[in-house]
Amino acid sequence: MERIFETIAGKVASWTGRPPAFMLALAVIIVWGVTGPIFHYSDTWQLIINTGTTIVTFLMVFLIQNAQNRDGSAIQAKLDELIRALKGPRNEFVGIEHLSQQELEQIKAKLEELCGGDGDQGSDHASFKRLISRL
Image (cartoon, rainbow, N blue to C red; front, side, top):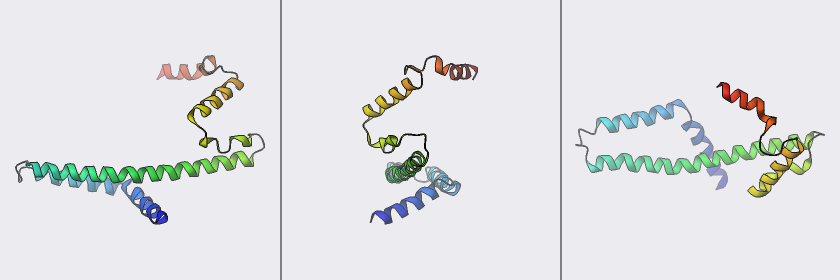
């Protein structure tokens, strides 16, 4: 069942991210808008678009989340492989995505400290501040 969902979710998510899907959605909205005067802008006419968009939005949340989960897992696996394959990085970083937010913040603060910063993004990031001020 899970594999079937992943296959369908992948195909639908891929198709909905393309211009024809947008054009189809736009066409539906235009047809709905044009039919407003025909149906005298009735409650039923409004209910049709409200219900349709709610259903599509509800289903798309699951498809988008599935796609993001797969992408995130693939990226994490690739990063873990790079850490494992290189001699410089520490293997202890493989799998840290399973730690709590507080533990991750502690690691981040320790790394910033080891890199010469005190965690407040002070003078170490002066070049970034200058860049932002020019924008």
